[in-house]
Length: 170
Image (cartoon, rainbow, N blue to C red; front, side, top):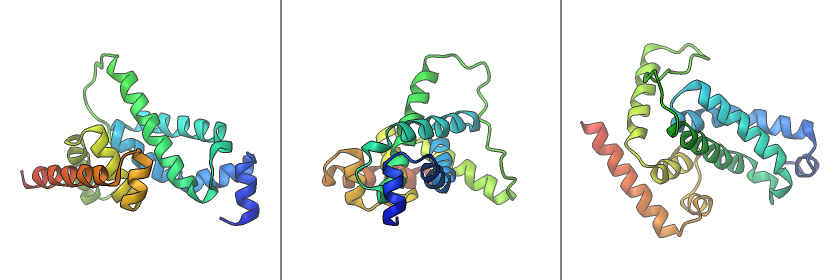
């Protein structure tokens, strides 16, 4: 990020925040959807992420890590929604697929497969896979974001990938 823009972002400038957040909002929605598995809750998670990020923008040490910080916040918001929803009884068990952008049939099949695969993972494994493979963080960055040692992150990702391979072969 450019110096002036980064400084505006850190100081809480609303326009700078909106510009930075709009660049990552699609990715945040996809990450949230992986966790909550329905479009309404995913949109709620993104909205809560925007609120928490705007409120805590002063805590961001390096503006160039805004994307990573926002993704981690989206994961936490999604987990909060899951915890809240686990205390309520759902009358309709179907999982609705996002309808924002009509997609070809093969994209729908891939989306359903991704959803089934991600359900096989626990929250820690899911977070590690999302950060490493969807957000493109390095192993070191993934470990840092999860606040775990590098070796633990490697083991977590190894086990998660083995689970995913096993699910794919079934």
